[in-house]
Image (cartoon, rainbow, N blue to C red; front, side):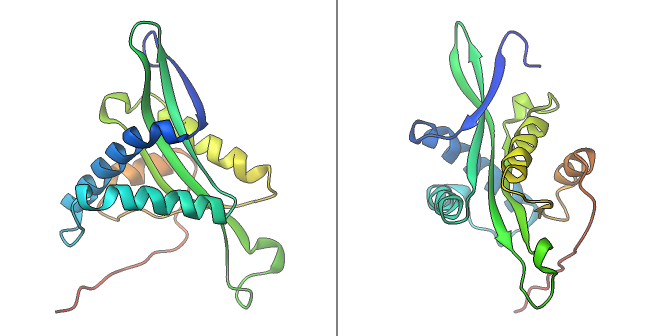
Length: 169
């Protein structure tokens, strides 16, 4: 999958914070090229990581990292997924279908893309949800992010809900 390096998906630890912050910053910068009113990654990454950790803790979620083990280079983080359990409004959805998995963030470093890393991260998040009796997983991505669209369609997701925006002023 990644040459001589074996990839292992595991829960993120505090030791991963530097790599996670850098990946969140890169993701924000990528999305900022698509949506001009987003804040710079360097201004948001640390706070966003804290937010993802808090949401995971509050909502039976996890942050998983894909770590490559190299006998010479050591361990490097190739990507991450942040996921949590959400619940729909009781008045709108049947009781058995209210709880669902939410993929809050997914990122793979550019040099590791197209090697199945996103797939193994998403599958780990889906396994986490399945063990908790969750039967549906949702994710949102920017409409302009064609790479995200292609990735999620290849992973078996189908369009379910569309949000449109209009900037005022």
